[in-house]
Image 1: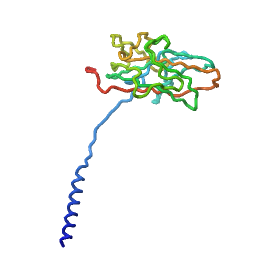
Image 2: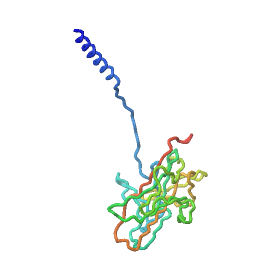
Image 3: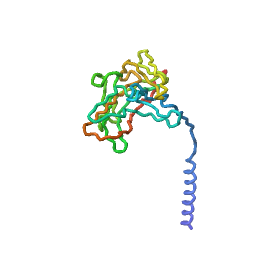
Image 4: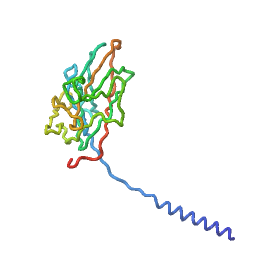
Length: 236
């Protein structure tokens, strides 16, 4: 009988322990929200500058009336082998957040085994080729990335949350006007961007086509990787 009592006590203790453990579980919730906007009004946005061979901005949205408003770069349609084609301001990158944003690296992925002839630089002088601009940083060279997520290639200073302007923090608000043909905002300003000081940077793209390049379209995606600081500036 003593053994039976001990077993009964153990069983009761297990039941009480199970009840105690069960009370540790709870359910709660927290609300969230985020807003989707036109690409030209985003916190980090791309702006147009140079024109393509058809006279329209390289950076464009083909169908602005649909909800699938995809930014694309039209880098020309009639190039041939053994040519180098350079756009010093294929597009610009503008930060509108009230905290600074670091561009860590850039990489390119090609569609359908297309050949990668692309070279990309970040630089401050919109109208200067990279070899004439001491601020330029080569971020992609025909399949070679050169940087990683831990690097800091260019720092975009905190913005003013106004998609109509970009700011060089010297008191110059540069207007980024709307273009009804390319369906994006653009700038032709020659006020140079300064790494870590201004909220914008220019992107130069060169297409260096070898003499043995086959005919056909080459296409893909340019990936720009950002790393944001987590603490906004006071008063931002």
